[in-house]
Structures are given as C-alpha cells and as structure tokens.
Length: 279
Image 1: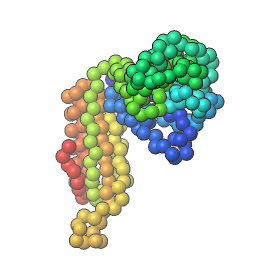
Image 2 (image 1 turned 30 degrees about the vertical axis):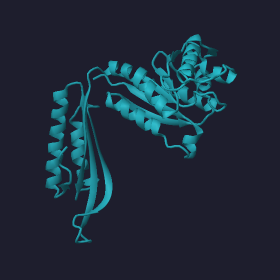
Image 3 (image 1 turned 180 degrees about the vertical axis):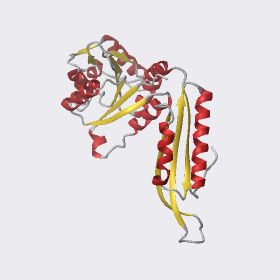
Image 4 (image 1 turned 30 degrees about the horizontal axis):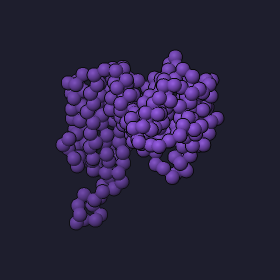
C-alpha cells in the first residue's frame, strides 16, 4: 500500500486565542485518513508573514507528500498566508490572469455588485509558478504549488469553502496515489480491565502485523458502575479503538476479525467484560 504523508497547517490568530475551535484540522485529518493517507503533523500559526514562512520551510524540509494550509486567503489586512508561503519558498507574488478570471466568475456566480479594487485584487495575487484552483462556493481561489518533494495546497479558512475545494480538487488526487483502499474501524468499550493489563497483548498484536496496516489504541474512560443498585461495585472502563486498513478488502477484514478475537479472549481471561461486542 502506497501511503502518503501529509502535514496540515492552520493559519489564524483566532485558533490560538481559543475564539475558534480548529474544526478544519479535524475534518481534513479524517478525510485524508479515510483514503489511506497519514497525517504526520498539525501546526497552528498566527497571522504573521514570518511565522508562516518559517512553518512552510520547516515542513518542506521534512519532505511530506502534501502540505495542506488552511486560512488567510481573503482580502483583509490579516490574510497573509500567500505572502508567507511566497517568502518561505523565495517566490514573488504576482497578479495571475487565471486566478483573476476565477475571482470574477465567483463574484458573478454570487451575484455581487463589486469593484475590482486593490483589496479584492489581493486574492488573485499568487506565488509565481503556482496553479490557482477554483473556489466553487466562495470567492478567493485556492492555489497549488509543486516543489521537488511536496505538493503545497492553500485553502480558505471558511469551512464550507475549504471542504468544497478539498473534496472537488484535492482528495481525488490523493486517492490516485493510494489506489484501491479499504478500512474497517470500530471502538470496543470494556469494563474490568486497565491499559496496563492489556498493554502486553496490544504490543504483541502491533509487532506481529505489517507496519501501517493497523491502528490499535486504548483510551481510559474512568470508573463505571457495573450495577446501578450497588454503588461500591465499580470497575475501570476502557475504550479500545481498532482500525485495519489496506488494499485487499478480504485481508483487511480478516486481520480485523483475527485481532478482535485475540482481544476478546484476553479480556475474558483477565475477567473483564466487553460492553458493546457487536459492530
């Protein structure tokens, strides 16, 4: 399975101040993982050209297949992503005719009465050599820059615009890299076993399967009462998250079923109980 590495950078002071929850990173990570990609790092950067520039240089030095940047493509003073990206790659910004045409068509589609002043033209000034990507929902075009090792995509921060562009123009390209991809995923909840008790078995499972073919993680959920009528009768509650993935559907399912059986048997041996045994 050809797994591609992705880094996500989200730009915006509002993300760092706690005003806005970073749902874009969550959504992008989920979509990328679903098609067989691997998100290696998520970075949040303030609206500062130097900070954006530094983050871009640091990311491409790690040579991910993709660097997805969201936020900071609009017309206002604090939209500085393209300036930062251009500086990080040592490129100039220039008014791009294709981006300008996309901008005009977007305003027409949105039935906006507008004047193409310097503020709006800012959205069509992109790094030299980059390719503009149509925004089917909003106005500011996205861009794609291809370096020797990494494809850099700059998306709007507005969720509906970011999602529309990603699904229409970026995700299909990612799918081509992986090819046929299948994933089986489920979370089991248990009572009566702890992370430490299951750790040796989980390590054996991970070590005995091909790298990147599974994801197996435990999450403590605190203490749960086994009986509603006996308050002192309580035990540890745990969630076990299991993912099997790969190009062969049959093999992916078989691997998932085999690991589930091993987990069920070990939890039973340890006198624990699976609360939701069915998928």
